[in-house]
Amino acid sequence: MAGYERLRRSSDFTRIMNEGRLLKGSMLLIRLAPGLEGITRIGYAVSKRNGNAVRRNRIKRLFRAAARLQETLPASTDMVLVPRTGMLAEGIKAQDVAAELGRLLSAKGRGAR
View 1 (cartoon, rainbow, N blue to C red):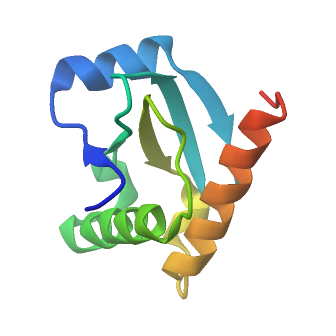
View 2: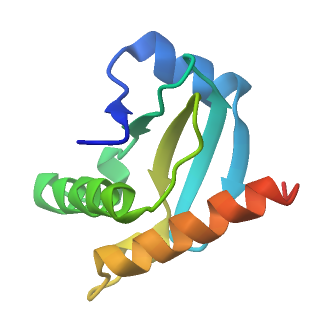
């Protein structure tokens, strides 16, 4: 996955969820926290309340595809993507998720909370 790396350690997820800035969209929540110099890392927090294993894995695939579709991701940032109920709708495509991800990340640059 060019452009970013995956978050894997539980301590990283805990740090970002506790200290990170929250960006809210209709399909996903993004928690952002400062990360390692020059490296963008992304993690996905998809719980059992989002459905069975098939549905959870589809959400994670959509998140990965949306991150790959992004032209630019914030440098030196760790982020955790969390699905909202809008992700459970049928017919959601990676382009839809990528558009929302881009919109939220660009709003972050303008000072939105």
